Length: 133
Image (cartoon, rainbow, N blue to C red; front, side):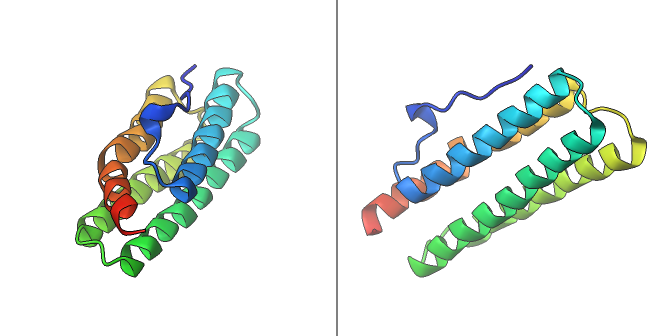
């Protein structure tokens, strides 16, 4: 089982973004635990869909802030958002089509996807927003 522990290292120092990230981390941990416990496939699919839906909403939230404050890295950041959503949608489609449980490798992919984005693009955005907000 892979869980993400929220701590200061994941904070971008912008409360509204950190609150979103904490929710995403919580949903990821629910998904990871559900896969580890071999919960019902329909339940796992529902959790995965909630994680995707909240992620899409969060990405739009970040993009709104970038537009409002004229963030120069918007296009690159948005492109990464789109790539990440496409990747996780592919994973969801595979899970739905194959009716096979998510693997530990796929959970680790999602963990890297979430933490990698926070520690990369979102840290740069947070640094910028701290200066302009």
